[in-house]
Length: 182
Image (tube, rainbow, N blue to C red; front, side, top):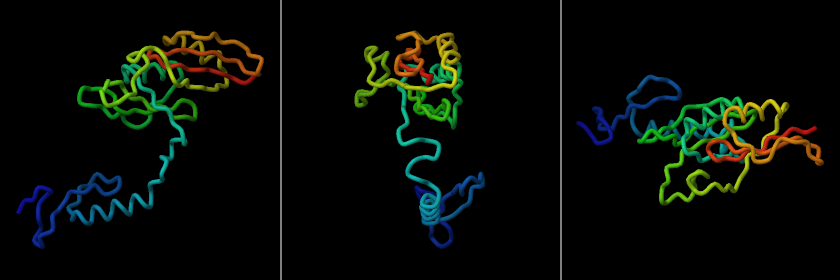
């Protein structure tokens, strides 16, 4: 007998096809078994903060997620981690890149009326946050970012407080402060 949630076995239990841990095998089992397994697995393996993230992780809202990722790879030698979550119109809902020892999340601006967040380019060119980064060789990273299409806001220079740094705007409106202690 069929049920909206699955097939019933000879004992009347609704069966589900469950993926157990990282196995690709589908195993018929009751919903109660699946829920119990999921709870035990979560309690044993999942912490409050994902292992690869810090307490504060920036999420950049950009006009074109795929192009932004390509820029961050070219400018900062970013590495995409995990898989992109793509929406129904092909937009990047969620992606992550690692830059040095930090993770930056990427979300494409879809201009939802109920969402007050948006890319700086779609909401008027101002920013309320700047990505502050430190590099072993700031000149090399600066040149790479400018070559990849970043605009100079404040030129790279030595400062009285013991740092060499400057500020750039990426093609998606995000601002990046690139620095190195000297």
